[in-house]
Picture (cartoon, rainbow, N blue to C red):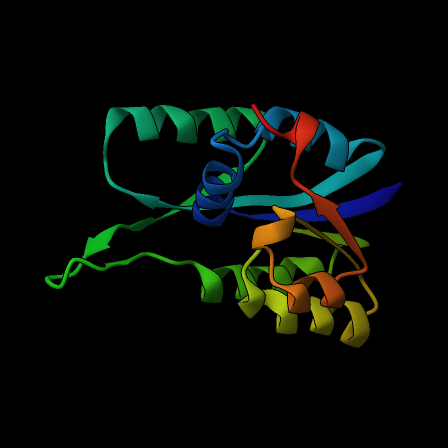
Length: 157
């Protein structure tokens, strides 16, 4: 059976689906699609934590689906900007756990991940599937992937 490791940039998928469609990502449908006929080696959803009850409920839903949820505190800077991205954490985990899987799935449109996708695909011989909102996904990431799957239609709530 084909093995898969799944890494979801929760903040990126939330903001891109809201911006493009004013809708949310359908994590249940995504899980069913990406795990069909595959053994899950690792599945991680990376998010920021503001500590509100609705967000905790969402995190528990992700856990119930099958994700390990990793949280980083949301930091509001004095200039009004915010910090809380998981790029380094996702990269480290994808390189570590992706080595154990046949397929690595990355859910993000962030062009910073093009180097990671290329390293996994070319350097480690992995099938790299990227899911993202087409118009908000970096072309460099789409090009670095083995396959790109647009988040649209059935992958939206």
